[in-house]
Length: 559
Image (cartoon, rainbow, N blue to C red; front, side):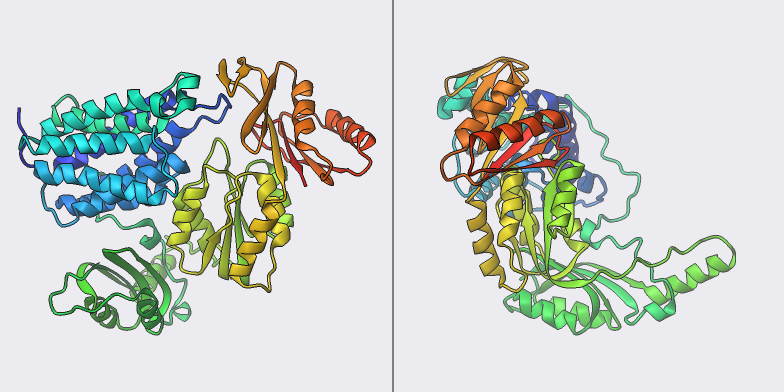
């Protein structure tokens, strides 16, 4: 069995098989997380991320393999959850860019796509760490590149990628000591290898994924999906044509104009309303309501080739709706009240009713429910940002595994957006004390980061397995105390763990200790603990908040 040419239909099967295999192995991948805390979600994040890309592909009838890869990359970008999901999305972003112009793939272009994915992923990570998904991606891609020099068989190339990926995964504990200490291989690398194994099973005929679709309509990016975008009446329409175009930058032979995002968007802004522009190095997507769709198309052609066009007459849509209303077939929903426009809007992440309410009381406009076991996706952030109306947006992720998804959302924002890289809820809450609605976005970033640095975070949770980390022996169901993400104590008694954790957090400079009670915490115990702390430390004030957060019985902040 030999395969010299990979077409879009087979590539689509590979993607869907990769998603299915990842789905089946998600819990196994979760179990490989190093820390024995009940938030092992690498497999879940990678599964949800790749499922998002697979859903985009499933809805597409694209027959050009490069275009199909672009659709996959967009789906992964918007669905990316957690650091592992974001890195996965970057791998396939580079993969797709490398083959963007290829109608089909041969063994060489196929191998180069994997190498392109590695280059993109390494650039996306500020401080790449070996012994992780990055290592597995790099070493497997290089093996595929070498194999492509020897053979024109795509199956043999992918076999080399999978074989070296498995060997690389087994070597990860030698590169990352904490993996060897705990006795696991890298979970992200295992997730990537699982996808590649799904790819290979399709090419070898060991798996067949039906690549049909219920709806064969052309896939439209979620941000441009306006199937429900019906005006209520003729009075609501100023610009009558809902116009969407996609431009492949630089592909129009009649122009060599350099794309300028701000200039392009400002020009479109004068042509209508409801404007949305998303662009990367290769593609521009535009959604706008205008009276002259042709003018929008001509502007797009100044920068490249029009590859997709969609125009809806909204006045005709209203006529159809009115006709249906007259026949008693459709009830038109009332318009939602207008959102107040502000200088700043703040988007944050929290889990637990008490935590969410606290953030809203402190001025946060949109709180995404999530955290350790439920990482919001890039799309979740984008949708939250679309619900606010502001000149500037500030995002507080409040979890180290959510920062990269927040940054991806900020990169596609239509307004200036910063991510204050809070890795815990106390950091995010404290950073809000540095927010100044009258300051510039640069000043706010500096002040909020500075405030965030003044807080120490403690957390108490339980262990889900036996292990040993940093010479701390941990038994399943023990209670562990963490300070700024590092396990510092583990005992069978939650009271002992709480006291030892607080003892290591509090010093002579500590003025305020806040205790956030989780959904499994004990309010009476905390009240007594607060009194005890203040009796022992005359200079310390203790505040108690019912946070209702999952996973962590108690969260502490010391300032």
